[in-house]
Length: 476
Ligand code: SAH
Image (cartoon, rainbow, N blue to C red; front, side):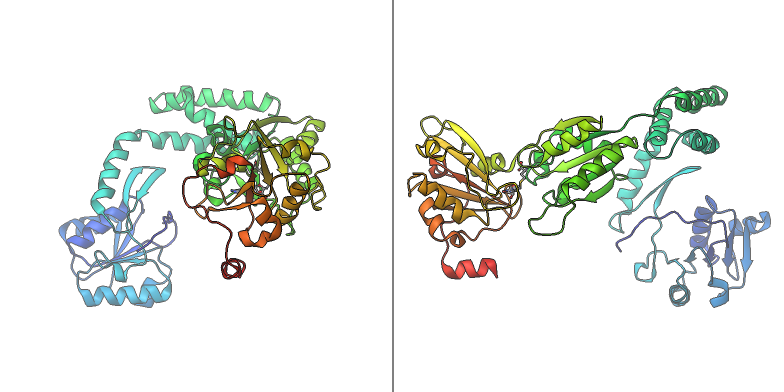
């Protein structure tokens, strides 16, 4: 049974246990740890249960409860140890939508009972989806040792000051940071040591101080997410993701990277798929500025490196103009990741002395003219060209290079989805690429590596130009 933990309120109707034997007694005792009272449907009861009834915490109702006795219960545990009767109770409960548990009969359960670490207001529930109760017990024993016995007092203290903090501090990051400081600081220590007066004084003083302090300013981190593999995130990038109140991310940023985001962070896609709907750059700039001015820690997460064809420069200008604090976290750019994956060095003694990063599109999205590049100078060899955003224009690019004097046999390797599970590589010559760009079967995102280094031995599978059937299959 795959389960999802929730914490059930016992403020309304009491939970119901059916059965009066030892098993029912165990389950009743468990529920009474958290429930003010429990109803018990049984004819005969053990001495322990009789004592609880006497004390008033357990109330007897008639055995064999029906719809009216089950309706509206927060939960029911069928523990008569009579298979037929337990199945009957389970069936009614399920029909009514009342959560039901029958010990050791998972097929009759809609919920599982977790192992519990009980610290009053603070409660930890451990489940293993039925895989191993012993593992759950071991975890519980470990947590029992790790969690301070007076954690409950700390939670009560927080509850006591919750209103005062809400009145003095705006919600969101300022309030969260205040509480983080409290739990890490002297007030929490005093409370755990039992000095409640000191703890109260310290929190009171901290509230007054925080309320008087100037509002913290937000900031924007332009963070490189790397090419897709989360292992290629920098430690700084991970730290930024963990500190973010809001993350604006590009389409190229994969789920595995977003998994590192702080759970409470707001995740907002502003994806830039070529030709697809996306948020205009000016709008992104405005969003970043607005969130930072509202005091938030804003992460602008971009594929690869934020300053390589990522329009990071434009965002930087807008943020500077608005006086927002900025931090840049570099990332592994796609071309570098592609070379690493191929185990092909981009510069290599005698083979290549320079690397040029080139966009396969003009700024407005038009086909490349390469006016800004002295292609003839690059044609003399000893240079590696890394082309980004060149999937749809690959044929045109190859033609321009040939016109500029690149030798027709010069190798080019295209790497699709570098560093991801679906990475694909194809090698061709410029001439082949110019003649039939579709014969590489390329899909975005891909980088093209032009140069003698592309002819060096590569690690892993490198395809050569494809047959027309293969091309059809890829684009189907
Ligand atoms: N800032 C990014 C580049 C953004 S431009 C970086 O530094 O990598 C988008 C282009 O990057 C895509 O068209 C493609 O050419 C390249 N790209 C991004 N991720 C890629 C990946 N995992 N594999 C191959 N190319 C990728």
